[in-house]
Amino acid sequence: MLKKQYTSYTYECGTDEAGRGCLAGPVTAAAVILTKRFRNKMINDSKKLNAGNRLELRSIIEKKALCYSVHHIFMEEIDKINILNASILAMHKCIEKLKNVPEFISVDGNRFKTYPNIPHECIIKGDGKYLNVAAASILAKTYRDAYMETIHEEYPMYNWKKNKGYPTAEHREAIKKYGITKYHRKSFRLLPEQLELAI
Image 1 (cartoon, rainbow, N blue to C red):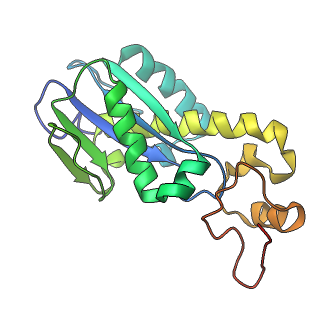
Image 2: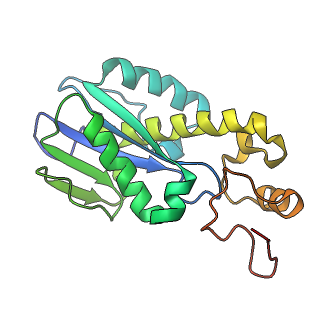
């Protein structure tokens, strides 16, 4: 079982994002503060769980967390400020929306910008070490997946309900065949260099 959190603060929030490496769709972040008594043996890095487990855990986290929030940063903004800045902005927006102000922020990964007046720590693979970061990873992933499944209905030829916007061979093949949509990130290399795409 993962450790509950990085510090002994009452209000430590864990934060993580999903969708950084995608060619289409938003980058989505979540922030979670768990209660002192929160325990769960199943919670882990969202990438180590199947879709059914993630949805089951999302409902447990939403019921039992002290507070949580989720935020999407969309394609236009990603193209304007770049994916790293967009990921950090998404995490900041989540922290801002929490109904309890955190005393400390545990961030999955190695890059973050200081949030005003709250100390933080970047933790490599934090979503596989601490419950609050893992809980954030599960919320970010499930909310982003749900968004991609919704826009799949509009553009089924890209099969976003399966690939979620990641650069699979099938997704790249569809871009080559049908071109790009309003949901694609124009600042990303959507096709390998030898295949040019008119944007």
